[in-house]
Image (cartoon, rainbow, N blue to C red; front, side):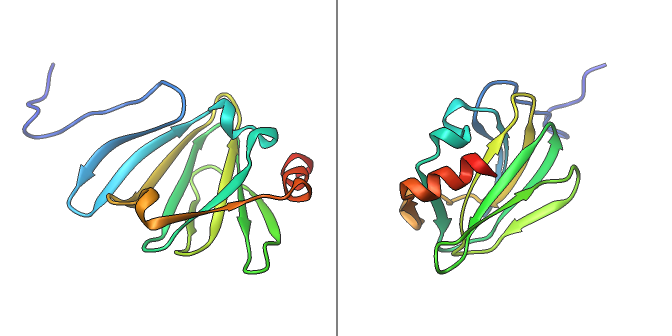
Length: 132
C-alpha cells in the first residue's frame, strides 16, 4: 500500500558520506555514513559552526566525536546508540565512523562554509586522533 506523498515523505540514504534528506524552514535533517576522508589518519582539520549547534545521534555502527576546547586540546567521545550529542555553537569538532555506521544529523538549514571555520591540525594533533 502506498501513502499519499502529500501526507508523508519517506527518505533514506545508503551511499557514502553526508546527505541532507529533509529541509524545512530553518532546519535540516541529514544522514552521515562512512567516508574514507573521515578515517582518523585522513582528518586534517576540525570545524566549528559560528551560528548554530549541531546534533548527532548514532543509529548504528560506531562513531567517535572529536571536540577541541579553546586551547585546542582534543577530546574523543565514543558515541552510544540513540543518545543525543549536541555540539555547541563555536566548538571545533569532527568525527570518524565505522564502515557500517549511520548517524542522524540535525542542524540549521544554512549551516555551511559561509558560517563555519576550520582549525587545521598540527602533526601532533593528527596523531592524537589516530591514537584515540
